[in-house]
Image (tube, rainbow, N blue to C red; front, side):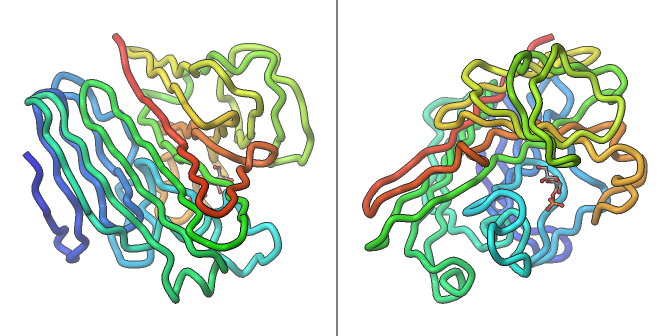
Length: 282
Ligand code: TA6
């Protein structure tokens, strides 16, 4: 089942249901904000304070950070994490190959508006596959006459039982840039969250595991060699827009990225796909 729906505030989204899972994808930002297998808890965290209003990024799910990750490299007045997540995508195709699988394609193309923010002609295609795994693929196509560089992330917010009970495996011995201190360090071992964490890890090859009390989430990527681990913890949770004060206790971001040294340069006509596959066991 694929249904075009609207929230009470008129915010358009696509509702998916098949024999594997349910999901919801907002046209704004191509933003997948719900995914839940039929016999499991929601995979992704979504803030109860999240607005579903035009031009306001949804807090939770998988925001698309594109065509820059974090602050704009030279103009701090431009939106954090780029403009894709607040842009209106077109829902251009769908397919239900079997009763367990639903495929969606959404598109964003450069426009007069985007050209004022980022002076390049582009097309991005978002392929989402809803099955017992969740696949999200963001393909950037350089439609310009000059090369451009993109940094981006599939900024996944995972729902966790309690931040005190989770650990992250697969980043051991990886170098990371600590956004809180500006330092570069090497991860010593399994990560447990006991304070604010905001780190961009490099040279990621293997899947990352988020171990929670009752399930393990595997985060596998293609076209990405960097990953971000973020939890705002107590004080920043209170300051973050559309986030409850205690939200840090039940969410953890592990983002599949092309960030910092993993930014990607595309020459005219070239394309790059950033892909994440999310699966869960237990
Ligand atoms: O990915 C981590 C991060 O860059 C954090 O520094 C924090 O700013 C988070 O993203 C959320 O950013 P947002 O713009 O969605 O509020």
